[in-house]
Amino acid sequence: MNLVHMSSIKENIQIVRERMTTAERSSNRKPGETELVAVSKFHSTAAVAEAIGAGHREFGENRVQEAAEKFPSLKEKYSDITLHLIGPLQTNKARDAIRLFDVIETIDRPKLAKAVAKEMDRQDRRPKLLVQVNTGEEPQKSGVFPTEADEFIRLCVDELELPIEGLMCIPPAGDEPAMHFALLAEMARRNELNVMSMGMSADFEPAIKLGSTHVRIGTAIFGNRPAR
Image 1 (cartoon, helix red, strand yellow):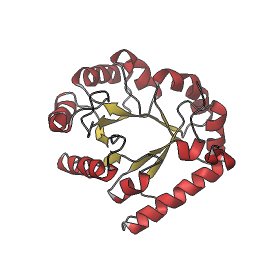
Image 2 (cartoon, helix red, strand yellow):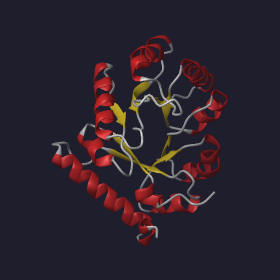
Image 3 (spheres, one colour):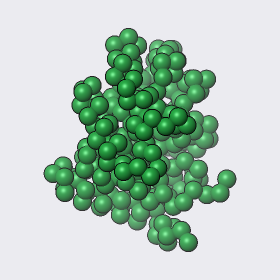
Image 4 (cartoon, one colour):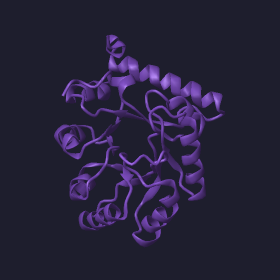
């Protein structure tokens, strides 16, 4: 049984926000300091519309094509929506991503960074960018390895003049997530970056306690992913 669907998306958002506030207060942070990115990947436009009806405006999608099918009409109707790309970005999708997203959280290699820089200049549009760090050095996962991250950030900021605002990570399944969040926080501090996107439905409270500025919550808001 999918327990999340026993309550409404509006109620789920409220519950998540209350838990976020509790985590902020317990770590001496200001309530509301952490942004909630509702991860709507694989969920219907109707589910997104329900979240919008509850007053929520910040969403995350994994795939450029899926977001392009769901969000242009919603963004036309609700101009204050902020859309994050939180899945891997192929260089041949850079043009569409720059046009559609307000935040791209998955910059992770020089070829992609250069493609994004070129498209930003061509479209005269500059969404906010995060560097994805593969804190667990998992070969099957996207993200720059920690040992290469500082050099890559400098390439993005100094040479390509990209608007890199922070870092993002997805801890390996089965690992203690706090050590990955602490590593990302130290990396952000060292590179003078203010944004840290870390924490999902199962681990957003420890992420908040370690300084997360954005948590990406899907299941706790929308329920389990529909069968595809």
